[in-house]
Image (cartoon, rainbow, N blue to C red; front, side, top):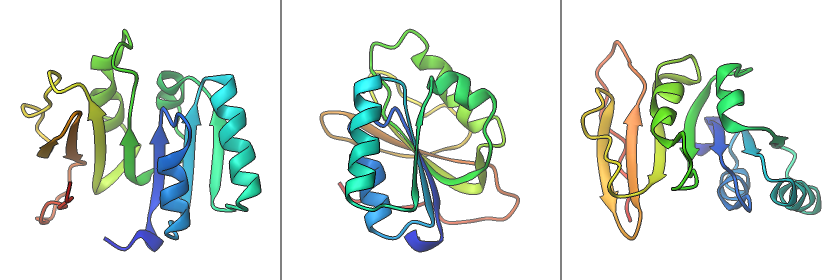
Length: 150
């Protein structure tokens, strides 16, 4: 996976660490979506201080954002609050719409008890203290799964 060719979406960006990491490794673009005003300000300030011109920071409710995305992404990272009342709705909103480009991958940091193994686009799971699960957008051509080392 060539990070320099990726458009990345960081949902529930929190402190922005995932967005900064992809930006610092040369991702073509990174969109960080965070609804908490303090976190949004922090991410925006850090992006300015680090001069990360490939990062756009949006203060938005993730669920509303997912209903009207403005572009597709090659890689989506989602790290929602585990207690969010709509947590179970997220996979469908991300994978069943135009958000994830065909054949590309989403990474989910979710509670270990919320397994997505039965989802038709499930690729693999890595368990640590959280469960990192990979799902892939539908793709008409065969493609080998993305491998992520813990």
